[in-house]
Image (cartoon, rainbow, N blue to C red; front, side, top):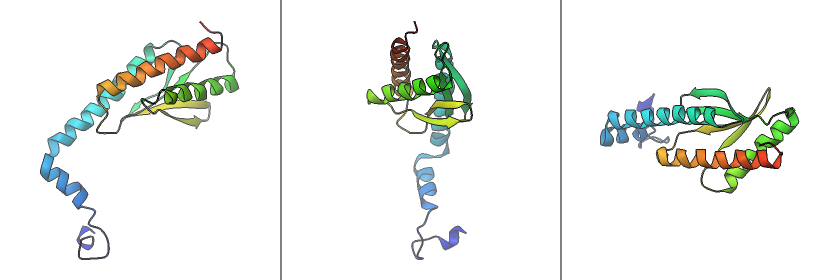
Length: 144
């Protein structure tokens, strides 16, 4: 009950964090920001589908998508190792941070577009880093 959550009582007024930005910026600003993040996630999924040996594991659910590097002829252990290396190489460039997770069928990388600072230029940077990392991992594995 938000009537119990106010400056006068012992708990913080949590509703203020929602109310104030809505009053200052209006609802449309938040709708536009959400639409941009959803569009960026869909665009990233389309771009990932164009990168050879990269498979889209989970299409965008809201602003989250999952992908996996599938080196030709690799077993699960080698594929998981390649995906860990892929994410490490992207992180080593220190421009974007992509996360990973373990699913029942192996390790996958994830892109989650949430920050209000994330726009098309950052997503292009992430995809560029991803392309370079894929080429580097595949070159190390002897795959053209």
